[in-house]
Length: 314
Image 1 (cartoon, rainbow, N blue to C red):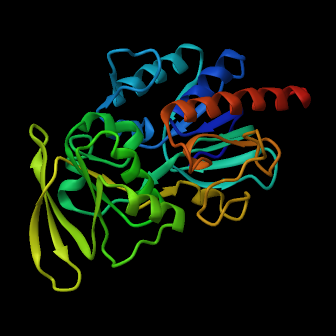
Image 2 (cartoon, helix red, strand yellow; image 1 turned 180 degrees about the vertical axis):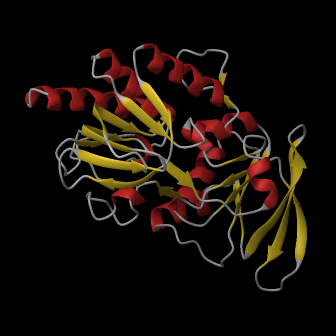
């Protein structure tokens, strides 16, 4: 680790649509931001194939291509991009200090855009088929499965919401749940139960996903959690809806968070309870979780950071 810390006015953590938008705006404000991201740039969009709902791309664009384009734009305006992993953060004293595997950085303003990680089933084929019939976002990918048989895995509010939404597209939606009752709130349970296009497969656990990147998902292997019996179930798509984990552990005990670890910003703002620290994107948004809303909050964080620095004559 180097001895002297490198100081920047603004440091942005994360390279999804939120972090890169924050970088574009702070760079254009002549703040010369430093953006630090881990070995896999681009956030969750790098695990998707075609993105059809980001404005400005009428023919759609591949998720990784969209992120690459944003990164070029951020670099063009003067963002310094470093590929490294932050292992320690201290925002209790000023300037804020971030230690990575290879260096120490300090900053006056910090924008946290570290995103959230979908929870996965942990199956061998799951990651391989992500974007090829397996998805963690109904709003993003539902339209690709019009008149298809869609399976949703989960039993909470997210799963029920995804299942209801997917009935707009699928000919039939199956909600697969490993228990005999849903954990979702009563209103969400009722919506699922009353929707004629949804059928619940109780006490079933997905143990394998069949298909290929060329053919997509063809079937699921289901294990009965009571009898142990394993059966094949034909489906064209699987939406895994068992929740997300915000990537906020670096700041536990230093920032206000909700019970699930999402950073809680002030109302109508990206400002956190620590002055000079701003949070944008999915690390503070468990409701929308879209590329466009993440980009929007990235823009907000950049403008708020710029104004905050200006108010301190920095």
